[in-house]
Structure formats: C-alpha cells, structure tokens
Length: 351
Image (cartoon, rainbow, N blue to C red; front, top):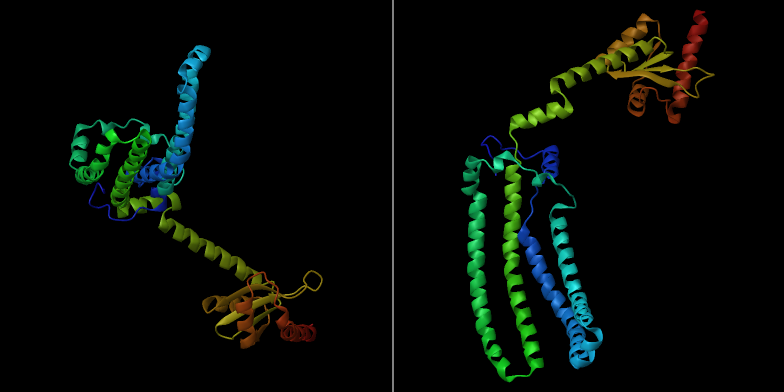
C-alpha cells in the first residue's frame, strides 16, 4: 500500500525496474498451489493406471515368494524395492517442481534476486511491525484464510459424507476393489480442493497486484527528482536546446554567403542553393527557412550580393522536399537549371 498520502502517481518504468530488482513483485502463492492441485489430479488420472500396474508387478516379484529373494540378496532387496518405488514417485515430484516454477514465472517472469533475503532494520522495528500487523494486507490474509478454512471444512464434510458409504464397503470387498475405491475417492478429494482453490487464487492474485501497485506509487516530487536525475534539469535542457538551435541557425546563415542563388516565395519561404560543376552532381540546398528565418536568409543574401529569384511554386517545392545538405530532386532539375542559367548570364553581363 502507499505509505504516504502524497504518493498518488503511478510508478515510472524506472521505479518498477528498481522494485523488481529488489524482489518486489505482484505474486500470489495461491496461484502455484491451485496449479499444483490441478496438476496432481491430472497426473494421477492419467498416470495411476501405469503406476498401479508397475507397483503390482514389483510387489508380486519381491513379495510373492519372499523366502526365495531375501536369503539371496539380503538387504539389497530392500534397496532395490525402494529404488523402484522412488522411480514411480519421481515423475510426480518433477511435475510439481515444474508447475511451481512455471506458475511463478507466468506471474512475474524469470528473474533471480537474493535482495529479499538480506536483513533489513525495518523488519525488526517494533513500530513498523505493529503497522504491518494492522495493515490491509494482514486483514486480507486473515479473511482469506478464515474463508478457506470454512469452505474447506464444508467441502470436506460433504465429500466425506458422500464417500462414507463406499468406505464402509472396504471391510467386505476385495483388495482390488479397495484399491480402486481409495484411488477414486482420493481423486475426488483432490479435484474438490483444486476447484475450490481456483477462485481463491484468482482473488489473491488481483489483490497482490493491487497491493503492489499501491506500494510502488510515487509522489509528484519523486517523479520530478527522478527526471532530473536521469534526464537532467528540464530548464537546463531547454536552454541547451535553444542554444543549439541558435548555433545551428548561425551556421546555416553563414552558408548563405557561399550560395549561388536564393529562391523565395517571396515572403514566407527562402531556399539557398549552391552548385559546383566539378564537385556536385546537382545543386545542393545550403540553407532554408520560413517567415523570420526566410527574412534573415534574404538579408544575408543581399549583404553578400547573392541573387534572389522569386519563384513561389519552386520555393515551396524545394522547402518541402529537401533538407539542408540534400541535392535537389531530379524532377526540379529543369526549372532550377533555367534559374542558374539566368544567374550565370547576369554574372557574365556584369563581368
């Protein structure tokens, strides 16, 4: 839960990552318990026929004529019998281990951390202990466990009542019938508790998620401090960006002096072009701008006697299709060539 009333904002990705590294995750133990019960039921349902046949064969082999095996193998017969039985039980334990890991990985993903095992002073602080004792988490656990106990007792009572009639038949039935009834009733009991655990685990999972989200909430000040720490002061960053734009504009305006011609709207757009026959395959945009920047480009062009040609469609087309440093598109070669020819003609007349 949120420890302070001012922590009203959702956690940032960095806060979530830090909480995960510290072992704080939204995880329900009941999910693993529910999955294990269902897995045991399914495993017993499909595995018991094979296991029963194998176990029957083991018993027949070792105990049908015990006097024949015991003198020959001595204590080795006990070791062999235990090993055979263990091999039958091993798949069940392997399945439970796999299901337990999978249930946890499905909730929080795969990660390993030892930080939750590290000793913390607040855990032994009696005041913090009292706060945890009267927290919503403890109340939820108490209500959940009481409900689980009550429902489990009720389910057990009705199941036992239903199965009791069959249990009384054990005394007058064969050992095979007894084994069948024992397995059947065990499966019914496991399935009953498995189905009971599903809604409990779902409710517990959503509560854990809610509790986790509340526990990692941040205050507005914490978010601002995090942004300053990882992204820098917004005011300083804004000042740096402004300075960089000014420097970039200054460099671009300086390139106007090297241009051959400036194409204008004439009021809103201005694009400066440069062309060197030997070095360039086509004219290149060395500066461009709109409104105030366009005015500065034209002022710089007049200062250095750079020809200014008014051609609104061409100015708009160059501004929209080219970035600074780009060659003009091939579709504009003809119209730009005419302008350069006109500029070169003027220069020739002037010279």
